[in-house]
Image (tube, helix red, strand yellow):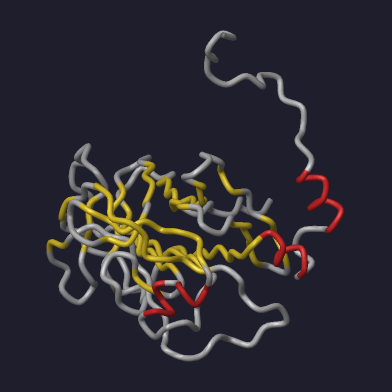
Length: 245
């Protein structure tokens, strides 16, 4: 019998921070798509499913979310402890703050506003295994610098895009990631030596508005209409309401 394929060490999902919903992925022609809501904040949830530390370089719209450089796998990223899950909610501004990820018009995206609109609409990770395995520390996700320095570095999202015009597509991209309000988000510097110059995993999620996913044929039109109808829920109640006056 053939050996079972090795699962990717890091799982990546998107979470709508305004309503708390996990955003499901829709497979289409070898790509994974997510429907975002304009104006909503979101986070990238990363889960290390392995028993070793890993370095995750995060790219949002082709921009390194930690350093703000045009994204490349050799750059700075987040270090996850074995089995750790964390949510990255914005562009890293310091070891204590991020600027929130917000679904917005592509022309208002951080990538476009910094002259790099070509890769708007895609979120990606490059994952590296560690050359040696120190004792894990139960801290917030650490941040390791680029491969060239291999020194202590701050944690942060990562992504970068080449400067150029919007790529021509059958359907024009209607959603990008903006540079939202700053919020507290602690991170620490750590040391990480990559086992290889090449990532062990590269994963991408494409995103756009729900209407655009329907127009592209990613979400069937009938399903789109069905989703607009509220489904019955076992526990429809919310919080305790005031009594009638």
